[in-house]
Length: 578
Image (cartoon, rainbow, N blue to C red; front, side, top):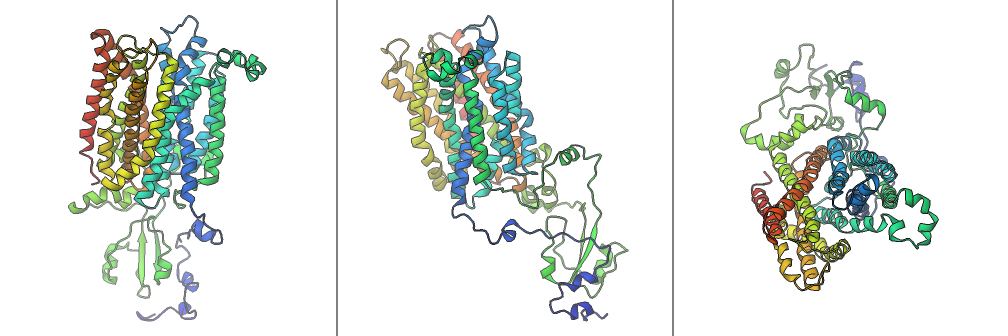
């Protein structure tokens, strides 16, 4: 066959698509052509506004996530006193801290694995499985007969919680532009912040109903159950919320992981992935001849390494194996290898290769590969530091409220009034603050504004030592209530700005199919930070109050946290998109 002659099988057919396959050797391995879900379901209509329903469903899931974490805070001390004989209000604090932190310790051990699972089996799959497991283990925690079993079930509840990483990943992937992503992220992360304000109140209202609502008909009907398990009701509500979110996510949230990356879940596949050394998946190289671009375009570009250079027939003999003989009738000969040879990138392209390297990005993300990305590492460190400081502020606030020597000396029930006022101002600020700042100043400038206007402002809290003078003992007067509500709401609203912009900017430092794994890694460090934060804040506040002349102990404690916040703000100045 001459160099300019078309194969006879192709000449017999005008387009040559069907008969070109006969020109290939029987040993030639073909690439299966995947059909996208949109092509397969071409007759189905796309919802007019899918992101609105998706955002609402994800916001509900995020609210459930915050409920699972913080609803135990109001009654953790009473739970310890109920399950551990001999404890009282003064000695139950350390036991209550174990109950609160066991959830975060459990999440620390599973966050990264949940993220990797979301990059393999899908983001929606992981969210729904986490919600289902959380519903079951919430009931188990409420029925715990001993303190040890309560800690174990609380730990397992955190271990089964893989919600936040996939939720943040979907928010970044479901929106097509920066503005809609910012708005959606503000709503979803804002619901997490709002849950920190209302969910403790819900947990407190529902705990120990026999003691709080002795005349209720509902309590009388279920008195044998509630008297034996006084803290079951808040966990029943948690179970119901998980089931509602499970239905909403399955109904309104579409999978964002590309179809070619999605794998069906099975226990056998899971075992093989954990024992990859025993089940090697390396495949041999394969050759394919292509004589029209219409056929070549179906080759998946991410399955192998391809060269953009056009080489002549003589040059092909040098670069191809000796057993491959280039045919002059073939317009192009594509040689694909499962293990592309590493090449040293040009110095000008090093920055680009950091985030777009084909060979590296096709491999599953690992902790080492994510940590080796300089941009990703810098963003994650800031996120973990900020998570630590935010939980320190949240832990210090109730200690400051109940302190009689260096605080407000208010009763526990009045803390709920303060948080309610804070929630009102928070809702007024949060939903408009993030979008406005990002639209006007950009992503990184909004992040720096949020970092400066959140943690450093906690040094203003001790001003209430002046405003509360003259108030009845154990009560909060209106000036103090208004001041705390505004300051704490501003701190909370700007912390939402910081968390949202950090999440969006960090997601941009990795390929889309690595985002869930990266967010799992982010949650791993964040969980450790949030587990260590309460311990640090409690030690700082108690040490300051006991060693410094009242009422300046709380001033010192808040000042230390504020200065750490200033240091973190300086750290955000070093973050850049490149």
